[in-house]
Image (cartoon, rainbow, N blue to C red; front, side, top):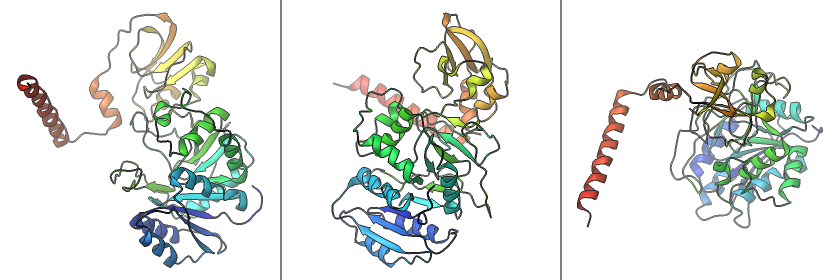
Length: 389
């Protein structure tokens, strides 16, 4: 990365003073290399924003210059983030934090080291501060395999704490300004394509996929997400809360793409299992979460029961589930099919195994409540059928 000014911190705010206050407090308690760091609080214009503006103005920043920018017109989230990301062109890099986040004390240290590491690698399109533990497509638990490094690679841009170098941002914007149509691109997950036109993130994800680039992600998260109720979130939620990195004196050990075993596509599927199976990558579709569209590759690695010839099968016991293939753990829950040969699958998948793989244990009171909800719904449908006019 070019030796420019210190990386600025850009806080994106709108109409959530409680969220902004919580984020700013966590930022003020973090570790910084010096006191020459710009903090830019960018507030989109909107009604009932007086409390947000007042909070931003009165907040004391002791590590450099604070700048409060109140947008003259309402930009909306997409244009607002794009404007904030564009500050990387002035500063050489930028850290962008939306107001419903909370940061680790190490977030600046990690980001600075990650940007310095990734700046010369054209296959890296940005840096995430957040670490996913949930597959947003299938709602399965998710964790990358452990390969001895502090990072992993994901063909999925981050919106819950992210950073770009000048070159990383310029590459994205060169592509974005050509107004790409991603609605019919099946390489982009359908769930991502279904997001609102106000989403900037779906374009950054599509860019990574088309250009075969990745975001560098941390193994232990440097941000966590409160999903506070707001314009794009209906209710507060803890579903995206993750543990934060509180280790001291960190020197992060980053892998290159060639060194990493933890490399995933936009469907949360491993991109390294073909080498273990001895199959060319173009001939294998890996679909361990049961969500990725199959595109007529010869081989299919999946948890689905399908009537193709089983070349090899694995257990679904180790976590994460990629490890069952990497460690060649035999069983009958993950199947490598030769899709060119039809053959009856003699196996069955136990519902209990499928459920308990994602959850340590479901409390009896939860099971009981779900049972009564389902039973009540069944009787309601029956009553409606019998007595409807």
